[in-house]
Length: 128
Length: 128
DNA sequence: CCGCACAATAGAAATGGATTTCATTTCTAA
DNA sequence: TTAGAAATGAAATCCATTTCTATTGTGCGG
Image (tube, rainbow over all chains, first blue to last red; front, side):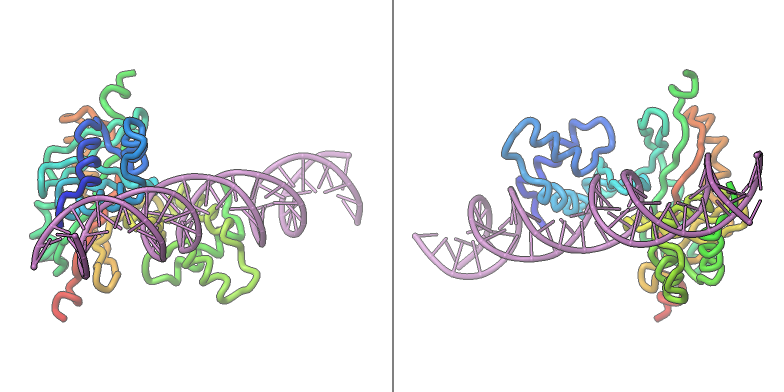
C-alpha cells in the first residue's frame, strides 16, 4: 500500500487543520485552494488507507459524520469534546488499554478496538 | 411527556429483544406481527422520547446505524461487542463515571455524557 | 353529546454522509 | 514502449434519519 498523490494532499490538509476534520471539510479545503484537487471519492479512499496505515485516526462523535486527524503512527487518543464551542482536547492516555487484561480475564473477551469520546463543557466555556 | 401508544409498542418489542435493535429492526418486527403497527416515523420519535425519559439507551457502534436497548430507568451501560458473532456483553460498571472528578480537576472539563463501546472477540468465538 | 384544539401519527419526500460503479487516466515494471 | 495494475473522478446509488404535510385520534369545555 503506497502513499498516493491523493493521500499526500489529504495529509497536507490534515497537517494544517487545527481540529477534527470531516471528509467533506478536507475536500472543501483542498478544492478551495486548487480547483482540480482530488475529488470526494478519492478523499474517502485516501482516508481509509491512511487510517489502515495508522497515520490518521478516525473519530466518531455519534453525529453520523466521521472526523479525522493526524496521529503519531500507530497511536490514537480520545477527546473531551465541548458541546458549547465544539473544540476538542486530547486525553493524554487511553483509558481502555489498561483495562484490556482485566476484561480478558473477567469476560474472556479479546479486545481489538474501541470507541471512546467524552462530551461536556470545556474550561473556557464554563467560566463564561 | 407521556407514554403514547407508539411508545408502548416500541417498549414491548424492546422487552422481547435479546440484543441491540435498530429503529428499522424494531419497526420491522412491529409490522411483522401487525400490518398496521406504527410507522417508522413514530418509531423514531418514540425512541427519542424513551431515551430522554431514561427508559431506553441509544448505542452507537460507529457503523452509522443507532441501536437501542431497554435499561433500568436512568441507568446506562457499555458493551463488549463481538466482531465475529455480533453478540454483545454488558459491562457491569461504567468506567467513565469514576474518572469525572479527575478529569474535571486536570482539564477543567465538566462531563455531560460519553460514548464507550469495545470491540473484539468474545469467549465463545475465541475457543472456536 | 358536540365540536374545538392540540397531540400523535402516517407516508412520502427530502436530506446528507457514505459507498459503489464504471469509464478513464496515471503508474509501474518488464 | 507497452501491457497490466492501481488510482481517480463524476455520477449514481444506498440507507438511516429527518422533515413536511395532511390526517387521525384524544381530551375537555360547553
